[in-house]
Image 1: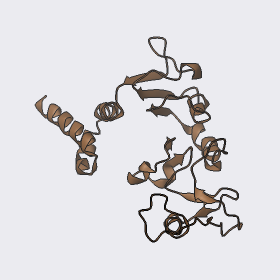
Image 2: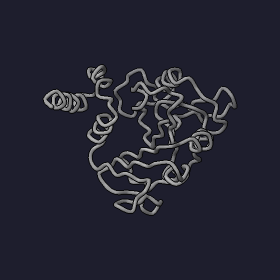
Image 3: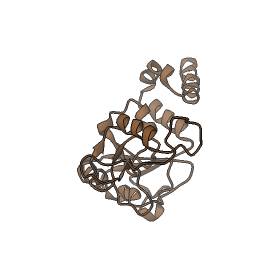
Image 4: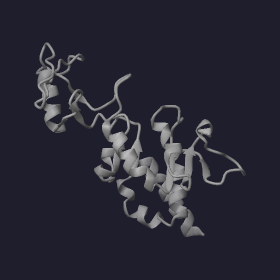
Length: 206
């Protein structure tokens, strides 16, 4: 499963099945009622944004001069918005439900690109079973206060230092996944594709 604190919806551009994604702080790629949590079709929500919300940039000539709240069809309140969690807002119910379902079965937690300073997302680190391994793929060693141990004393924690693209490629290499990645190389971002081509060339020369 893929837990993300990002709200930009970038994960929706990948091939990760939607049911395996948990947006810890909500997403700009989904909409729901803030009060009753009724989900809203996102394409319809975007259309309603165009017709109801003022364009403060002044670029859209068809935008209304004054914004009109978007009303929830389920409860009737004008509280429909992207599912992102606002300051002091409640965490999505999906987060609490999925944590209870997913974490007991976890045998490997990969932690990438985070300071582990934001709760409750950082609680995943110590809520997984004590037998589960934890791999930190980061530029800095993080999470010591949460129980992550670095160095020779560590029995369950592994530190992969570096940028995510590079450390993920190293992991894929160790797991024997380079041939699988080679099949989708044209679908990767250019920077990732360049690293993969270089690694494949190195393997051919060995």
